[in-house]
Image 1 (cartoon, rainbow, N blue to C red):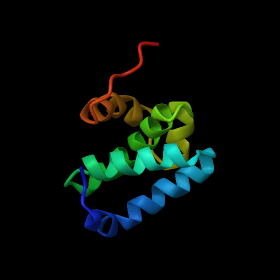
Image 2: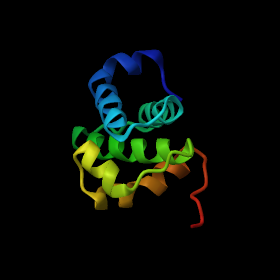
Image 3: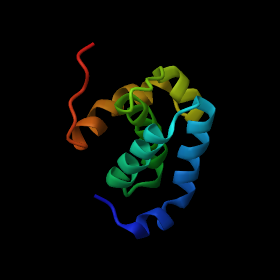
Image 4: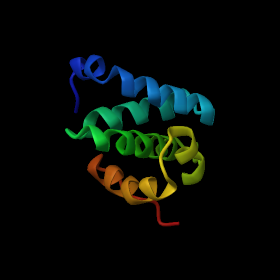
Length: 102
């Protein structure tokens, strides 16, 4: 769980989530899940925050039933598809959810 002050501290990253969500045409639920996932798992290292943000957008869309391809999310967030591929399942499990079996 995250604190309200985390929103202020990570405002730049939350803006990036919103911008990527706009590019992907994601709904409110997907955006909310992405923000919650990011704030609940934000890494201490700055270099890992971009990857966590991208994986959060991918997982947020997945959880909300608004699936987008890893490639589309990678393009919208400015990371490689491989970055999302390597991080999304761990992020999902950290949130206490199971990865789909497709």
